Amino acid sequence: NAGVTQTPKFQVLKTGQSMTLQCAQDMNHEYMSWYRQDPGMGLRLIHYSVGAGITDQGEVPNGYNVSRSTTEDFPLRLLSAAPSQTSVYFCASSYFEGAGEQYFGPGTRLTVT
Amino acid sequence: QQQVKQSPQSLIVQKGGIPIINCAYENTAFDYFPWYQQFPGKGPALLIAIRPDVSEKKEGRFTISFNKSAKQFSLHIMDSQPGDSATYFCAASMYSGGGADGLTFGKGTHLIIQP
Image (cartoon, rainbow over all chains, first blue to last red; front, side, top):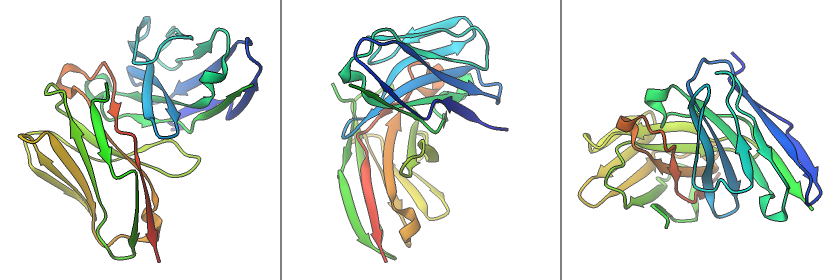
């Protein structure tokens, strides 16, 4: 199993540009989520999904959209990038009942200039 | 409002010592308390976790101590090694509710084990 994969690994955007961060998992996990990690802030939940077709907002959802058309994929869209969205983004997945036991991807480091 | 407070922010321990990282939570609905270990350039990885029905859990050199009445839990690393140098995050979630709200993380502790 590849586990949780994320692409790209690094990305530089200009303010106002849009992009999609990709996340996929091959463990048949129902629960998937996106976190952002900022220095001294820990990890904060952006959006999550408890299954295909179902998504909900986390702690810091503004400026991001998600969709879940399949069990495997959970892309994160930045609609109009802002410097405040410079961060490292992690996708995670788990079996729904064990949503606390999450498996994290390797991360995408995004810089917005 | 920070629901999980973690301390210290950074910690330096000599090899063989016992680093201790502490966390306190506010939400009494939390019922699952994992610790994650993160190496530079990598995603966090689950290290050990505890439910509030036990006061201590050991896995190898790692031990979680849990004090439900004080709403505190801590990670101890026995016989620490330089390879344990990493950032450690405590977290909490409502496991029994499916944990749909995800994990609430502490801000992390940067641990260095000196040879």
